[in-house]
Image (cartoon, rainbow, N blue to C red; front, side, top):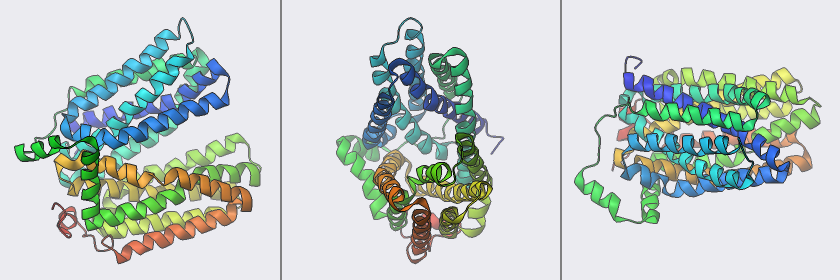
Length: 413
């Protein structure tokens, strides 16, 4: 796979885009705080970005399936370069807060389309038996970016101001957009009949086409339902862990940072072992075992009294969710027809993430009332129960190889 120049270039582009996203994650709130001095305004910008991403998810799959995906990658990175570059240039001479409210949600739109597109192009860059390993590498790049990006952005912002950090962010997207020119995707365009079908419906019907594929496929249906429940339980876990460290264990902010950073070790391990684990055990045992391990780690965090123990358990949790997540994404890429992959990806993300904000609110509210320890114990136990329930569904019967998984109950029907 490393001898594939398209894959090497694509991995480099993904790394740059991920670093750019991480820069934005830190630089945008700092810029809002600099201009407005208001925590409320920071929340409004974040909320607008979230609304833009969710709304885009309803039609992103349609766009990805109807247009050339290589061109879309270039447009998305190029658009984010222009948007963030405009902020950096304008803020050299003025500080118009309205520009932030305009640019950040628009950038969120292109970010969502980019994410759906990159999932859809992976099968056109590597062979079918390399998809899981490729996703592991891509997952690792995001882990690196999530650690290095914010730290670098903070250093640049401290030295030259948040606008300068956003300007550097724009440069990373510009380089990534140029890099797309050197990628060649394998031929796999839909035939004329499928193209006609894809172009006939409105956005609602196109989104429902992806949702129907998920529902009609026994394995993907069960996976989506269980992941929706797991997302409800896990969306607010980071907040609960931070609360436990700060209020219950009396630790300073630096320790919180150390624990969260230590958790990325699990992410790295997941990216390197997932292909071997799935190749040896098959999808079903890998997914069930990984989420069960994550659930046990969450329950353990409720009982842990020391910072090192919490850090280790955080790493184990991210190891489990990482392996399960990479397996899940790889499976969808392998068994979804190419002309539907964008819509199926967008529908899956929208459906399985819908309960997340509700879960975060519920988990944190209950933790504030009864304490974090019983909440983590309950969440961890529920995660294990949900994961093990997959053994009695199509997930437990998934084959040990991608070919067997595709054949399971009419995968491409």
